[in-house]
Image (cartoon, rainbow, N blue to C red; front, side, top):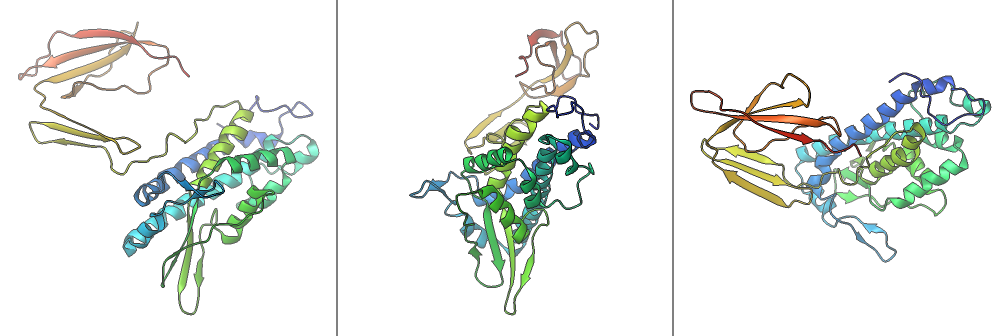
Length: 342
């Protein structure tokens, strides 16, 4: 991953500056941080209704799900702090990913030796100031970031926990101009991203302010998709259809005679099935033209899936059945071809 990226946009002198040597590593770092944030925050959003469809006000702006803060306020103390721990993990990773994204954008859009000088050092400082990195960007890139900000009509949930009454933080008020920069300033001022959260002590109570991110996840997802990936000649699959909406997890039960399967989808529609298997199958696979079969695996189920196969490639699959003595039947072999890579 540390090889020079030779398909990055051409610079004035036609050479790849030293700063670009770390580009592949930084891009992988950004995507890993985003994916880690998604995994951490998914249980919180799932349990509190954060994925519910949002209503809109008279101006067409989204209204947070009505029950979101009510559900949170009713959680036990342990559950609250488990959720806060997930939010700390998610927002810290998101902040790092945002900071590195802005730094990487600065590298990839540098047009002269003078502007490249601002990106030298290759490895960015331990804490990247998101606002100052944003200010160094060309106005056209700032415009693209603000367009992305406008596209995502969802909420982050900025919350407070106090020893007194629970309350939801007022939404951030921004002017129409340069909203993305104002958002970065707000995060930096409250340390809601990157430096995580602060504990505010008062004579009568303590206040923990934290953020449950959804909107900021999707903004970063669009930055990767629209600004970073194209400049690196890469494809990025956006998160819209990958974020979980499940209220319950898939389950499988076996009582010795019957298999029962429950498969809820992202909209919490459930497919239930049960059957009594009376046969054990052995399944093997190989690429057409190869001599050796894969190690056989035994299953009581009537279907299975293979992953990580090559696209646009023919495979042979062999199925045998075992009797009570463990002897395999004559094999049944079928040939199939995987779909072309999209």
